[in-house]
Length: 468
Image 1: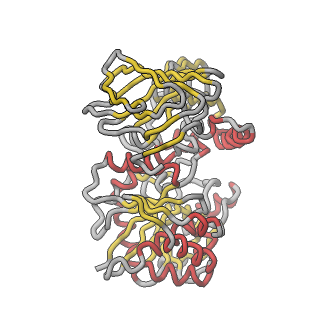
Image 2: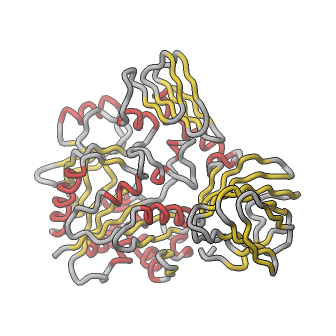
Image 3: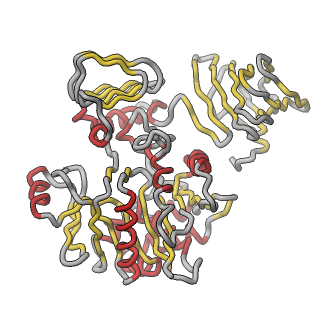
């Protein structure tokens, strides 16, 4: 019996959906196609009805590991999900190669890797399952399989795969101009390149050894020298640093003679821009996609999204407004791809808005910056039941904690105390301290920091449940 090992690629920053998507809270962690679950969660959930499927493995960046693990745990999986952590990004070829070496020899049965991006939307799950069955059968016979999406428009934002007789992939084509894309649509044997793949492990390693031997040797070393930390497997950083950065398409699929393409009509979208999200979303009678606290007057064919406050719009056509607690994006809808230029400009100016939201997620909960000034900062802190922050100390700031909801267990120097709702405590600079939630409901408190330096790097950890 052939086993299917899903490999979910959950790296990437998703800058095209800024300001909702940030470097530390990327697209795959957002609820976009389904209001109740993230794209990562939806990717895991759609695997549940495919026979012979092993628990998925998720490849994710070190900085996203805790929130990814939290979202996975929300699904209450029957078996543990292995997270493979990349210390730095090297594109899809090294990530997939690492997955192959990690799983090599683990099972006596033939194992096919089913590689899926975590940030795609698929609405036709039955067709997805049928396509996977076909792809696995082709992979068993020695093919490197890619999934080609049946195009419904002359899209210029995707690469294409030309299909020959049977399932043979004839060529891979870069993003075409409009005239070329229209010709592809007319011919009927060109498909959008979905970034989903299926390979038998030994076939993948053999072919990668022919066409990308340096990637193979580096990623084998990254696995061999990796370390285990509970449900996390850390790839070796020095081995990955030496590895070339390349996509699986360039490194292998465009070079091998064993490539097959499975045509698939899945209700698929990579949600690569705000316009793409507008196109696939349910619209009102005026063609608008609305989320949050929004009031419209004479607005048509627009996407208006509020995450925090009221957004009111009058007389707009084909427009985009996205509001978060610390940024507002306004653009013609058809220029939404250019948001990448804004993100690049923010990076050059070293502004935090490209990297994180005012709410930052941690393995123990989250904190939200409510107000910030040179000498003081106010945060709302949420600690999950049973979780605790590290035992730590700050050189340059003191902290006042006021409990709003729940009960806090506070360690301050040699003293341990319980702080209840409407009570407070004070942590002077230089004092070892720890915050813990011993209760059954989330602990919420307000933290007021005072000091000459309030950076998040002013922290010395003495003990930490999360290995930081």
